[in-house]
Structure formats: structure tokens, C-alpha cells
Amino acid sequence: MDKSLDIKAFLDADEKKDLLRLLTAGSVDDGKSTLIGRLLFDSKKLYEDQLTALERDSKRVGNAGAGQIDYALLLDGLKAEREEGITIDVAYRYFSTNARKFIIADTPGHEQYTRNMITGGSTANLAIILVDARTGVITQTRRHTYLVSLLGIKHIVLAVNKMDLVQFDEKVFKAITDEYLELTSRLGIEDVTCFPLSALDGDNVVEKSQRTPWYEGPSLLDFLENVPIHLDRNMQDFRYPVQYVLRPNLDFRGFCAKIASGVVRKGDEIVALPSLKRSRVKSIVTYEGELQEAFCPQCVTLTLEDEIDISRGEMLVHPDNLPHIGRRFETMLVWMDEEPMNRGKQFFLKHNTNTTRATVDAVDFRVDVNTMEHLEGADLRLNEIASVRITTAKTLFFDSYAQNRATGNFVLIDPITNNTSAVGMIVRPIEDNDEAYDALPVLDLTKLGITAEQQQVVEKVVKELSRQGLEIKIIK
Image (tube, rainbow, N blue to C red; front, side, top):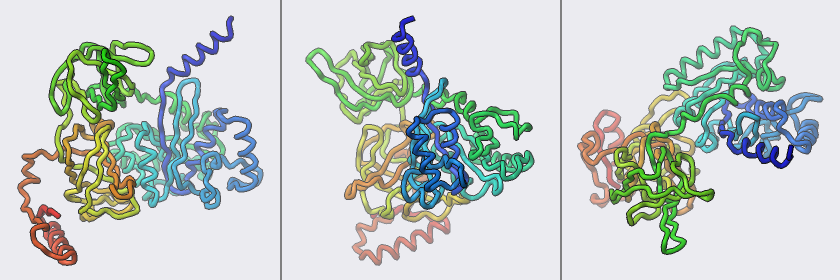
């Protein structure tokens, strides 16, 4: 048999594998980096030079004990991480098995690195939450689980690590899983799978362990290879945010973009936003040729039967399935800038291919990520999360984040420093006739002619009134 055909068949099969993006989270020393390192080591996905470097580094800076390989060093590459034995930045690792491709984001456990975890989890399909079998569900476990639910990650693995230190006691495992399942049920997370592990020794990581005869489930790698993620994509709501108008010659005019969600077929009727002009899909063009249909997350070029004026930032959708169209919405905001929020500042808001000016109208409440308690609204500081109301200068086309992650997220950019100030997950639109918002009394500080110190006093009074149930809308 021709070897070139074998190679071509192998490459074709490899290209068709689906991709699972996952993150690990947990408290310091719960073993996140060790678990991923063990997963790579036992699944034989390391090169010889990596193994040589791992053995050398384990002897020099390892924390696993004399003669032991410290698998965490495969992920913790920064000097400060190795010195302190903790994860500081997000580390990404790619590997592939016969069944699936994986991209793993090893995220920090410290509360001060919440923004790093949000970054790592923004594209994840699945989250592995590690807990130490000796301590069980702790405050950081609750915090990470809340953040995972906020990010809309649908699949959670509870990895009860270091079971070897509690003699693989089934009662300990069950007590931890029962407490955790109670937490996830309150957060509305339905798909939770629990594993008893010893990342350092490899129990139930790649192979089933004989030290847990009471555990009847699969190994962690078997589960990751088979967890269904194809239903996680939104295939109902066609959203096509135009990125580029392709005009190579007088005979061709197409619109290039990555399909954010849904499916489009040749001949489909579409409507362009915001003009609301209609047409039909004439062709779906790709580098390999024309398609009869395309779906997310494919990148394609659409040509239309009619000449419609469409440019970057506009969106093509099906006429019977429109997104929200508006300038005001309520959102959960994660503050990621070292500089605290200044509500008097106008930000750049980037939503898909659209960029516009935006202002934060109000902070309804902040969330204590450790207790999930709602606190009094105030300007946000680094890593804080809050429910806020935002108004944009230009009309946006969006869905709620719970319905469509692709069109329900955005970033706020500081116009002066160009730093990413915040990321947001849209909760709902605020309609122009929203009585709950528009009926509020308005205090326009710009017309009072007062000093900055006097303005701060007025704002404190308004906040106190808000705590007592009398909310006032402030214009600065």
C-alpha cells in the first residue's frame, strides 16, 4: 500500500477531529498544573526534549520530593511561578489523542488573578474545578464555580484531588461531591461529573485506578474524549457580523466574516442590520470552493442577489430571527484594569466587528464572588464584578449572553491608555420605553455648576437614598 495515501488518510482524519477547550481552576496547591502535566505525561504526548527538560528541572526546582518528577513544571514556566510553587499567568497547552484535540488553559487560583481566569475561560467548553480531598469545598471553590457559571460554561468536572492523602476513602469523596452538587444546583449548572483523583500518582487520570474499586465511572481522559460539546454551539440564531467587503474585480462583491452562530444556506432570505434591507444568499464562497450551506464557526464569504450597501460592523441575519437592536442594555461586568472605574469617562466598546463609544450609566450592585452576595453599587476596582447599565453611541445588534455567547459579550477599552478596562456579558436590553428605568427621577449634575468636591457629596447622598429604596438617575 502506498505510504503517501496512509499519511493523507491520517491527516484527513486528524483534521476532522473536533476541538475541546477546557480550563482548570482551584485553590493554591490543589494540583491544577500537576494534573495537566500528568495528563500529558501518561497519554504519551510529550517529546523527548520536553521529558529531558522536565527530569532536569524536577531535580533542580521541583517540589514533588526526592527522585520524583514534578509534572507541574510543564505548565508553570515563569520564574516567579517556580519559586513560589503557584500559577500566576494563564498557561495554554495543546495536545491531541486519537479521538479529539484539546486546548487546556491552566488558570491561577488566587483571587487577585480573577481577570486571568476570566481570560482563560472566555472560550472554554468545559471547566475542571479541583478541590483538595483534605479540605473539601472551600471559599475559592465557590468563587471559581460562580465565575464558571458567569462565563456560561456548560460542562463542569469536579476533580477531588489528593485522594491518596485520605486513603481513597469513599465517604470523604461522597461528602465533598454532595456539598458541591448542592452549590451547582443553586447556580443552575446541570452537567457536573465528579472524579476521585491523585494527580501526582496518576490515579483515574488516564487509566482507571485499582485503589478506587468503589468508583465505577471512567477515567478523566476517557471522559474528556467523549463529553458531547456539539450541542453547545448556537445553531438556531444565524448571526453574521460583517468583517470585510471583498471587491477583487467589477464582477464580484462579497461580504467576509466568521459565522458567529447559526446556519446559512444558499438561497436563504436575509436582512441587513441596521438598514433592514432584504435579499437572498446568492453563493457561499470559501478557499476550497462554493458551499451549499455553512455554519458556525466557519469563515466564509457571502454574495447576495441584490446590491445592498453593507460595510464592516453591520450584521446579516434571518428576517424571522432578529437580535436585539438598541443602544442600552444591562450587563454583568468584570473589571480588568489596574485603574478604578471612572463613570465620567467614555470608553470604546468593542462588540464583534463593531466599535463605538459607551458610558456606564449606573452600577446596580457588586457581587462578592466569595459568598455570591449582592453589595451596594460603587465604582469598580480590579477583579470586581458588578451588574451595570451601559449606553452606547451607536446602535448594536446583540443577544443575551445566556442565549448566545458569540453576540452577548463585549470588551470596554480605555480610550487614553488603550488598556482593556472590562469584559461584559449582556443580561438583557433596556428598551426605550423601559418603565423601570425611565420612570426614575433625574439629577443632571452638569447643570448645577458645582465643584468636584460638592459633586462627591451629592453622589453620596444619592447613594444613601438608593439604599433606602429611592433610586435617582444621575447625569454627569
